[in-house]
Length: 256
Figure (cartoon, rainbow, N blue to C red):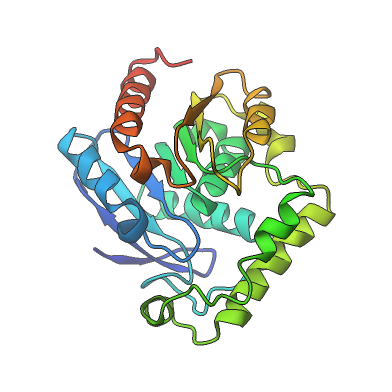
């Protein structure tokens, strides 16, 4: 599981189930306070068992990726997208399927919007590309971070939970104050098959915001699961079934 320096100034940790493979890989992108293995490990292993090349990418400042500590400028989602595209350049990938969870889902939606030719298909779990004013109080509940474990602090290289969560909350509320657009205004650029997967009880991502996004994408659709935020964990078999069909259809040109 190597580290690679990219031209955006980050050094990213990743795992690749088939480094010599010639097929279009699936890049998996985790959420806040995660790593590829911690948040999406079973999905990586399942994809490999289905004979897909799976690449689990850990975003800057998390796990073994650098620089640390993780920070949250107002454009951090777009910075992570730039890192993702630079990572693809660094390992010689012209195109990939993207599968992102939570914050990683937002990054995947941006990448599919900003670099449509490089994204073969996209799945965003628990991400909607736009934030409504009523989410302000939901985001603010993350502060002061009493829920963050000591193990997570060590893993991600910070000691002050209030400082970490405060920076994230400020970035999220700034986005709301600016109109809530993360990638919604770019959504019509997406040309690949897209599924936004949401749990019906996901407090962070109201269903109407996901529908608003996919309505702007020619080959987009919303899939709703009887669970909360982590669809891939809480509705695993249904998630596997839809994901496999999506990837097979996208690979054969039938999706959407």
